[in-house]
Image (cartoon, rainbow, N blue to C red; front, side, top):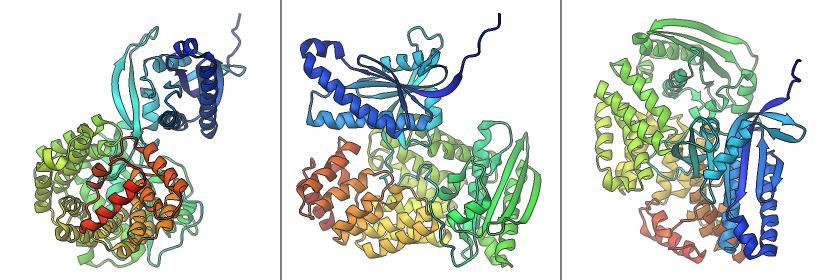
Length: 590
């Protein structure tokens, strides 16, 4: 007899259960039941915001379905953050354990059944009170897109589950407040309105597709795309959209004409990479985003040892098509220095892949350092590898809970070595500028930042970080000019790159503007929240000050003024003193 077919679908499953519920009911039944009703209001509001569906309730336990793993983990994180904020006001607030798993489930009416539901419940059972714990399946889907940091809990054997599961605990929001670390790969939404066209030839390089049939080679295609962006950006007569803006379109099948409207450029470069053994095939095509016409297309087959010459050729041909005749001198400037050993370059690309996840888990930060060290072992003269190792060491030190400038003293030596090897590398100068700023060597910091922009004038991240320098030098008007420029170069800059505008407005004593800028953030950062709390005390509203301080403590319950000011290296100590006084007036702990 043929079995009837069962409806199935893939779902992100959230299991939540109240900690110590039975004991609390026994001690104070009426109060606990009211607390449970209050908790359910919090949970259902966050579930609705994430387009989730509460499909089962059993006393103090809840099962929720989401179509999106990112929405699921964000909802779970926000639920726990909301409850933690309530517990600070009312210690009697109930506490949840939350577990998340991605699985194929059986649909029966409004109910979901199957092994995946059981796994989510088992994960919830081993979660710490007040925490969110997720399976490897969830982590793999959200690590780049959820804007959260995670702790790797290792493999666990769960009751009645045959295979061990690797679990991760959500630690908190990603917060790139450090000047030293490179920017994490944080995707942003696509612009809602057409961007204005620049006044010179312009291009966006879409991430090249990996056609190798091996997901492990994604890093290679990404690295090639980034190198083309970097090489093109060295031409001052060409407007090049930054990596952060172009990588918004990674993995999406989208019309180049739409891309042109959204980022405000005339040309779009797209292509693919197929790496087979010791050979590589690259296809590339240049599209006029106004007409959709293919201006230029070509295919390149080469041995891997010729890859660098191939990249130089692609760059030169695109520039010749868009800009016209390229002077030999400008072409020489566009060619970056590169390692003699291809294996070292391969290690660098792998290191960068882990480095961009360095804010997600400690293991990623460790892996980044290891891969950069392997690149240096293979090619000790590889300047970029030395520079990125300095960045990765700083990220690793933050995870270890130490002051990198005290316990990782070789960091500045590594960066100096990179500069000796390649004094024309913009990223090396950016890192040297950041290190000198942390050490309060303001003259050297400015020298290196300006040199970085001279070498790569279209790099929005470099421009934004240089604006931070001028804030610390008490030149907020100049900082605002640079921030405006960086946003034009990259309309998708993450909010942590834009928080310099909050600092500038605070220094200019435009306190209402500080709160207005804060309100426009897609996701509030810790640093912006701190300056907003300091600004609010000048606006005469106690309620507004309390709200701003609460926003900051929701992001960082362990916030301390003294620790925060260590990463605000003002040349004039009076600005740090004013900020400290305002934060104290906002009721924040010293």
